[in-house]
Image 1: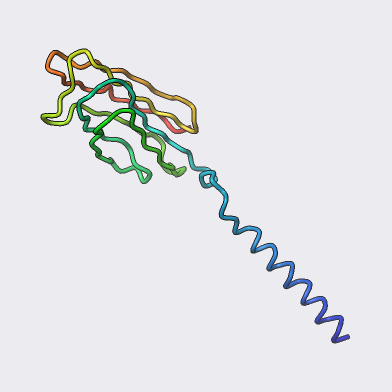
Image 2: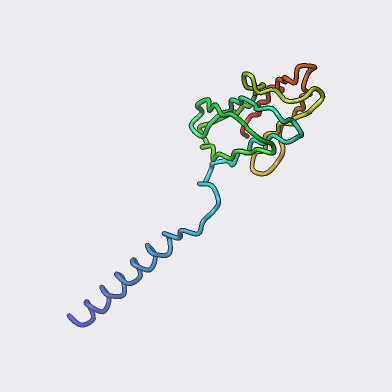
Amino acid sequence: MKKKFFLMMATVLLGLVSISLSSCSSDDSSPPSGSKTVKYEVTGNYSGQLFVVFTGANGQNVEEIITALPWSKEITAPNSLIAVGFGGQTAAQSFGAAGQTATAKIYVNNVQKQTGTATADINGAMTLPSLATHLE
């Protein structure tokens, strides 16, 4: 009787250990359940620097200076984040050349949601269009 009990307990413990080890897989590269991957991207031939502001993973505003194009930033947005936004303009005293362009895009789960293009003015300055999208 004791032998049967120990054999049964060993089987249960072995099962629990193998279940817990298999659920700890570290090769899962997908975002957490219910979250969304948001990618901000700026491409073009603009040679000046851009000061941009975008929504971060916790809903906060993130400021960054883009020194060269192309540029992109990816965040994992939790379910609690309902919308994201992006905008920018020439960084102070870091102008490009007149006529150069930059295109900003927002992707959600690899699907392009918003896009906008700006052209540098005669002074080489530009203001990127403000982009926003709802996270469905």
